[in-house]
Figure 1 (cartoon, rainbow, N blue to C red):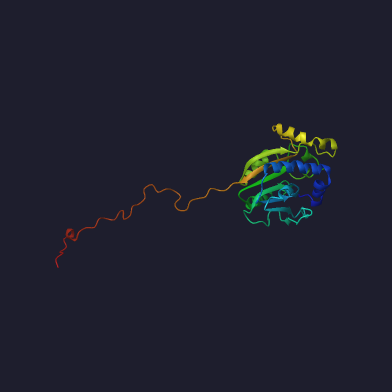
Figure 2: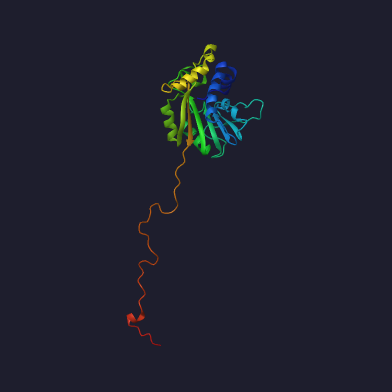
Length: 255
């Protein structure tokens, strides 16, 4: 079940906890993708809070929002790039996206396999996608006070296995958002040190979200023609007997 776009907007843009969460996850994404110059960057679900750093350098930025969630104009003060769409039928050309971010899209989808097929379709050769989902081992997935408490939380193994089934190859992964989902200023004050500590102790991976970067796996091309090598190819005219002179057949050649 998708959350309402107004609830998502209020969390990320009008609450101190949401703005802190937005900055932490966005900084991780930008560290992975420092340069998107000349590329097409798209986000699905409610990924627009993470896309603003790419507006100044990407060739095109597109915010795709599923129908059950609703849509809001974005970015504020600039021409709108957000689009309302069916979650498994995007108005995007096949192979036209270089970078794709999925936030609050996969875990709330009613048809995750079809959604992943759509993600694979729009990515171009060499394209990359980052899927951000609630961490089953984290405390954010157990709190209804944030959007990460809704939908299906994942373990890292579950997420990577599902992506692999849909022909995605994992490039890197990490857990993020280690501060508690609390409105208390004390925790927000230590958000930076908590993230650094969490990244130094990856064995625990108890951050609020999981982030997985994948590339699109392409099937190996097949060569036209025979599928198996011919071990003993026929030579030209093989099997045709040598010409026999008429005299050998007792024919009179005199004129």
